[in-house]
Length: 359
Length: 255
Image 1: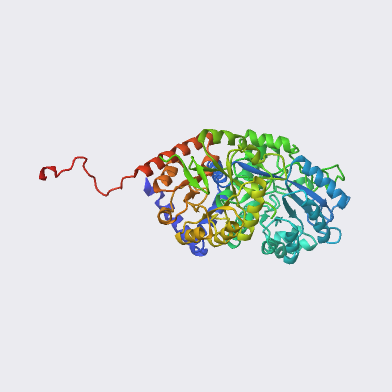
Image 2: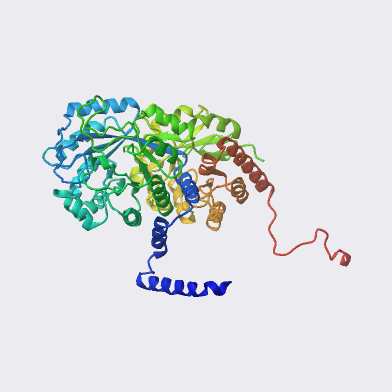
């Protein structure tokens, strides 16, 4: 009978009223409450997946963008407790000569890629902006789209890169928990949380067409906070810089390279995170790397992701020949581009190789 | 139904234009063309992929098809002009759909920049098809600038909602003396028929064909709906009435 639960419902009403009095309900709070709710409660994952699929098909069609990363240097002066390239690790350091860069790039090009992501560790002496500019100079002869994942820069520096032909900047905040961030970054310029956080906006102001943000899942004990902040950060970028294309990645940490305890995010939670992101950021690009195993990558095609890396090597170089063994993380999907394209076609999706034309 | 309609100096049979974005594979393009009778396909320059040999859309477009190059990805007039030039070079077509979207959340066209780009591209000798948020004044400026058509959105792109911007498009059809092509929002054949019944000269459809379970069949459905709507428009469509009207008048006995 209703009389059995009226007491409970009364209490619920009072609690809800207290919550809405405590937070600023005037500014789109329903979204925020929903995100937290979806992240923390058991949801019908099938329903979420369906909705995510529907939205992704509408906004992106039956297409997946394929790209590959190229590590040009693993020199790094940051003391990040979770990273294979951390200055804390005694690994053989290497930076590609421009000649080697060219070999790598030609080898990547021959495979069929037209979008390349250029990565370096943070070390302005061994991997200077001038060096990176020279690499871009070579890359732009071969690729329609050049993205970079390097240390955060000043706006005028980003402008130099934009004028030289980059279209996008990838910069992961790793965690949005400022105190925790400080604890896991022992030393180095990366310790400056705000400088890194605001770098994507400096890049946007410098004229990049797309930015890619994301947390490193599994670092923070409670992934819900980092996912929540990523979505809010994404909404903030879309609202303030509507001309920019936004993409999000959710790399999952690999405990084997981490020096601190990690909190692996389960497959089902990882999928849920992607679906939730699609729900609250309908048009955002969602990226899945080769960190993820084949079965996750293949099964998530069509359910929310829009970009996949392929034939990644997380060693410096490694496309033309294997140079050195130190890896930033392990690759869990070693298939070549041809095989990835086969899977896409099997799933009735069409591979795309670039998102922009050079003008 | 008139057998042909004229646009940009060409006589076309089919009033259905189809976009190639979002398609699951380009291999079905020849079949779409064959089954639906479509004569104009739009291609985004940023999807042409001149630098890679895999999945180049141009390899799949039959020779007799008119390619309409679109400038999606452009954020202002300058970029649109540049993209159009690149597209024209790659496709050998001078039909340009100007698409300038500066807001990735809604993908609404920037009408002001579109007018600027139209002027510039007309000057350079292109056949310009500007895609705009429906607005009569902008449409007039575009015609003055030399646009060969005006393409208002029926609804936000990709939403399949039909012609929700109806009351803004109607005066354009009435007042503008170049063909009006309704672009975006056509989610089902009845929407395409609706556009034709309103008097639009053609429709451009992408999402609802591309992501349907069978794009080829859906293109046929759209094509038939376009024909049905156009025939009805040319005959003249009866007005809707507020009250039931008996087929046999009640007051005959008074005459």
